[in-house]
Each structure stands twice: as C-alpha cells, then as structure tokens.
Image (cartoon, rainbow, N blue to C red):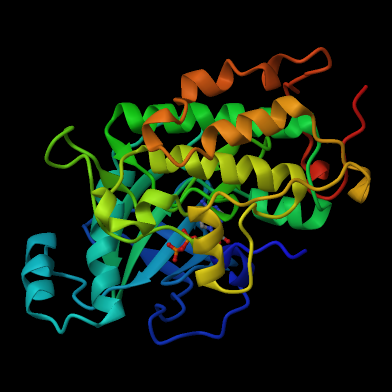
Length: 341
Ligand code: ADP
C-alpha cells in the first residue's frame, strides 16, 4: 500500500512551474530603511505555490524558514490586491492563490502556540512575497512515516496530544485549519509537532452566518464527508477532527484509511465510511482496540458527534496499562524505531 499525501509526496521534486517565484537573490532585504537582511541558504521544499529556503538573519545569525511566493503586485497594499482580484478572469489559479495567500497571512500571523509554526513577518521584495517562519529542520510527520512505514504507539500518542493542543488553540480562536494532514505537520529541533501551511484556513465567526462554509477544500485523503456534500449546508471546525482521525490511522498503519486510486473512489469510501484496519500479522503491527476506537470516534459521519480536542486527550488510548507517552523524542526516530528503555 502506498502512502499518499499530495503536497508532501511531490514537495521538492516537482519541476519548477510558472506559478512559483523565481529563485531569490543571495541577500534579501526588508523594504523599509534599516530593515533586516536575510542570507538565503539551503532549499527546504516546494508546495503548490510556495518555495521554501533557509534564511539567516544577517544581524545575529538566527536561522528561519523563508517561504517565497510570487507576487505580481509587490508594492501594492492588500486592499488594492483585492480590488484587482475582483476584476480578474475567474479561472486564473495564480490569482486565486494570491487571494488565498492573503487570508493565510492574516490568519497565520495572529497565531502563537508552541505546536504551531511561528510566523514572524512577511514583506515584499522585487517580484516575490517573503514569509519569515520558524524553521522546522526535521521534515514532516509524512516524511517520518514514509521512512518508518508506521510509528510506534508512544510516538503516535505524543504527536496526537500535541496536535490536539494546537487544534484546541485554533478552534478557540474561531479558526478552522481545514488542511490538517501529515505533510503539514512539521517537526522542530526537539521533534515537537508544528502545524503549518494555513493556506486553506478560515475564520468561522458565528454559529449562524459564518459557521457553515461551502468551499471545497482539503486534500482528498483527509477530506471530511460534509465537505463533499454541499446539500448538508457546509462544514464547521469539526472537519479538523475528521482529519485528526485520518492522521491517527495513517501514523498507526502507514497509509490513510480511505486511500484509493481515484478521487471518486476516495470520496465514495469517505461517504460510506469504508475503511479496513490491517491484520495484526501484517508488518507485525499490533494496533490496540483503544486506538481503533479513538479513530472511529473522530471518523464519525455526523460532525457534531465528533469529539473535541479535550475529549480526545481523555480517551483510554492515552491511558492504557502500557500507554507511555515519551517526554522527549530523539531526531534519529525519523529513520529508526526508538528503543524504549
Ligand atoms: P504551500 O503553501 O505551497 O503548500 P508549504 O507551506 O507546504 O507550501 O511549504 C512547502 C514546503 O516547504 C514544505 O513541504 C516543506 O518542505 C517546506 N517548509 C515549509 N515551511 C517550513 C518550515 N517552517 N520549516 C522547514 N521547512 C518548511
């Protein structure tokens, strides 16, 4: 079985596209007088529209991740961008992306949490917008699961607890991430989860008017059923809880529950809640009933019935007789199963 996670699977391997920004110069200055300068270093990865490099702050040698996005109107203000967007032909993916990028920056810049990639600043230089972010040097959970095939129960517990803390923080501030997947869970120096890529995030403002949204978003494998079915009136922050169920399943087994060859087949399986746990004999991977029960609580077709992050961390999976939760993880566990002492 193959592990599919669209962005991460192709990150760094895609041919340069006309939607990506040109490679940055060796030294990138912030526009205002006396602003900081960043020495551009190693290439870190590439997403749909962003290219990411290491950037060293010239003043003190601190290293950040610099996300670079092509901006067509570098010196114009955001309001002008919106006006221009309104006049643009509807199907231009770059224009749609610029518009979404604005929301991404607005939301991400307001977030501050130990398990969310820290946003520092964004500025325009030449034809690109640069976003200065906390550097996550240990790749993503997706890379780790690929190398390891599946993770051990203590690791899954640790990552799920950190993820729940981040999601609780977001939901409390009326933000739905809407694209939680292993490729967007980056890992810092200490192998802590850092939720990143707020490209599809949205503010869910009140129960009546803004609670339910109707945009099709998310990566097919992680998408919640109510997002597929517009007649159900849209979706709420509970889409993130569905994704937590998919992520938990994928960390335990090495593949997402609704994996299929085509998007239609994935959607069919999602709507009918068709997923199968591997046999214990497969890969000698015993998955306890408690873990299966937690995943099934998150993968509930009725969004209101899905647990909140607070309920999830109280689940017996985290409190089993041998349910240890490691305080620390060594970066070597990106490649090898840790030996628990
Ligand atoms: P997009 O918004 O286009 O999907 P991403 O935010 O996923 O772009 O970033 C693209 C790639 O850049 C990621 O897959 C990852 O390899 C790298 N990257 C992004 N943010 C960071 C970070 N904070 N630290 C290290 N690498 C990062």
